[in-house]
Image (cartoon, rainbow, N blue to C red; front, side, top):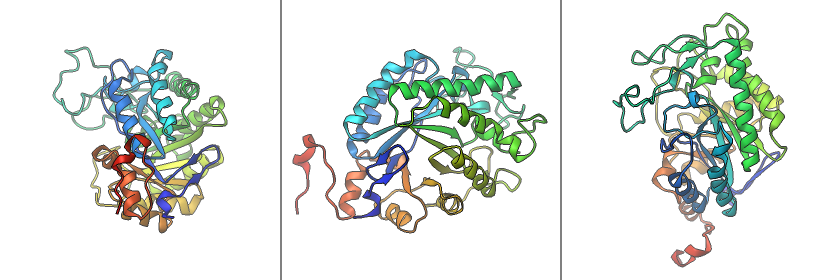
Length: 355
């Protein structure tokens, strides 16, 4: 049996194979509500055979959205449409995950395909917030520095969104601490210049994330697996480092986090050596040094490549992003390439290739 198609047992859940859909924003929501686009988008990948789907960055508050078209889970009314998606995924033997996020200084942006949209003219603009009043880049507004009271409010919003996710029936809750969004902004000394208990040394800069994890753990059922996505490096010498990520992962593991979803970058403009497997060594290092389950991501595009990562013990499972946008049925094709019979849904059995 190829390792890519062997099950992976975690504390609360079991992945039927090692292929997981990575969270990717669709920018297709109104007021945070999921709609038919989201149902078809996620359902088709579940039919295609992934073991789990991590839903795109879902905002824990209106001001936490990257754009005004982001999904949200800041009110109970959002739950009904998401419940429909989760129910269908479960019927396909696919675990349902959700990534909870706050964009921080990278909030209030246009959707990617309309970058010159005047957000203020269309009343789709709001003031962004951050640990320190440092803009993302020269084109960004200066964010408002969060007060202690506001920090505590955001921690509670993560807790409340997690409670809603639990009630909906998600199997996985992933806290988004990567790609330059709010939690990552607290972690990195490049974006966190605070002089209080949430800034300065390593222990202070990770405090925001650890307090979120503590509160989230208090409301999640034992059946829900808690994951954290991190950027293992800022790709800048003075920034967040691989060593920081290892130290943080040890603490998260001790708090009951099951998985570190290992990505990189996104905080600042940096020279990144983008190529196949360029982020895999970070997953490997964290796995080796901490013993925690890790997922590898980044320009992984074919079955042989994914299988080699697992066989080399560089990660425990593979998260696919853009490749699943291109090909929702990647797992079926990968099974055939690796010499096993794909699990084809009964309505599609007539299309099975027989040699």
